[in-house]
Image 1 (cartoon, one colour):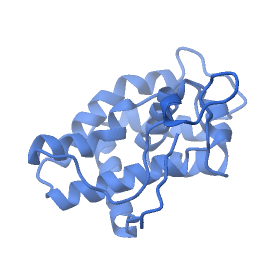
Image 2: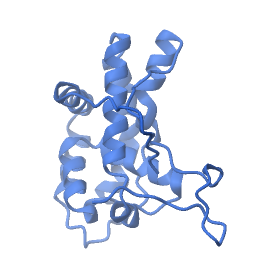
Image 3: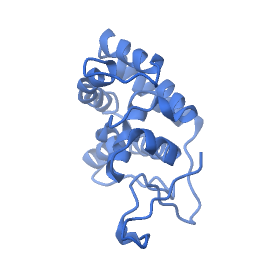
Length: 194
């Protein structure tokens, strides 16, 4: 879940957000027609219909590693500031869909919910906005862990440090040792409101 602080928050700019979505679209486009068709099928599906093992939500999973590789290639020459800005956008986008109504659909553990939110971001802006508007559009247990910290890892690999986004938020789940414990011993889960 998302942890917030009282410190002033740096927010992504509209240009940074547009750059993230454009990079994701470019990465998908570079993979050919099949994954683009699968993404369209996921976006246009009836959420009430169960997806079988031959359906688009299962088939798209095989394209996630190539997508992350392609994103890494597209971001290879970005500056320290550009990678920090993109990491801040991903962090914010994950934060915005850190909601109970979405978690109920995606299922998964706390870490799994982070990776499910990563999947929503990885599929691009159209799918992200569809899930934000209608959480039933989310897919159960569909995960993309790699995108959650992709730009942070690229920053660290290239510049030897993690980016300082200044956002005051975390994309990580709340842990029991954070002091948020219910009487039954489970971690209290705090969500953003819809």
